[in-house]
Amino acid sequence: MANLTRGIDHIGITVPDIEEATTFFKKAFHAKIAYDNKKLGDEPQQGEAVEKTLGLKKGAKVIHIRILSFDNGSNIELFHFIDTEQREPVIASDLGVQHFAFYVDDIQQSANAFVEAGGELLTEPGELLGDVENGSGEFVYGRAPWAC
Image (cartoon, rainbow, N blue to C red):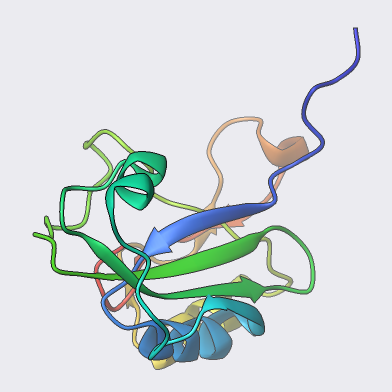
């Protein structure tokens, strides 16, 4: 049987301001703007078909969508919605996507860039526990400026 999955193309994240999120990802992870699916100022994506396709609450409007790319790995798609009630961002114990991870060459330098870009470290860099990632590696947990 053939493998059905070739890899992750992108992860979608709803943010309060795409320009601020883009600046954060550029400073913290050297992201590049690949393209905007919907530019700020374009007619919003809205209506029953969009609500059904994206599983949105009635009346929600998508006003900006941007794809960010990174030198190695998957892309991130940023969404900005209006006219819908927003919940607090999830934490690790909530259902749903709770984090994503980057491979980096220097974890301390990357952690410093993350903080300088406006993020908050939840841990200091440390060794991975157990025999994961080929037996070695480090990790650090952080929260983006919009609490993701």
